[in-house]
Structure formats: C-alpha cells, structure tokens
Length: 109
Image 1 (tube, one colour):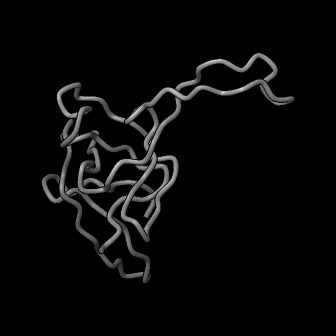
Image 2: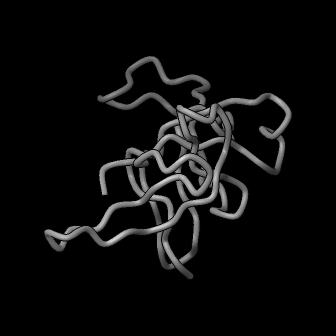
C-alpha cells in the first residue's frame, strides 16, 4: 500500500461516522503495517480509567482510536476540500507531494 498520508498532514474524513461532519484533523501517528492512522478529533471513544499516580482522579476519558487510511483524504487549503495527491521529483533531487487539482504543495515533502 502506498503511503500518501504522513504524520502532521491535515486530512478530511470521506467515510465512516465523521464523514458528514466535514471535520478536518491533524494526523498524529501512522501505522503503515495495518494501513491505519490516529487523527486528532476523529473516531473518539470513551474509556473508563482507574485512578493511578499519573491520573489520581480516574474516571471516563475520551481517546482517539485509529481510522483506516481509505477513510481519509489529504486536505488542500487552496481547494478547500479533500484531494488526490501526486508526487514530483524536483531538479535538486528532492521529492514533494502536491494537489492534483491545483498543484499546491501538500505537507512537508
């Protein structure tokens, strides 16, 4: 599976329970082996935590769970929507990802 989504990218949900909210979120971690990622504010679940030294109060916390990469698309700020990504090799030998619609550079490389 080609990894078109990387850590710190901004993505938008295209499937699942987050789809109709139009939310965008930052990718916190990517798991290439399983093709999943943890996205800030997506796929939240509640977890009961017992009191510990770190969290002396315990209680119910909300936590982001992983979401499959097929359910998110990179977000282009210029197009204001989820877009497909292409790759370009520059003259100096560096590669970068770009929006296939408008040509805007996406992410950090």
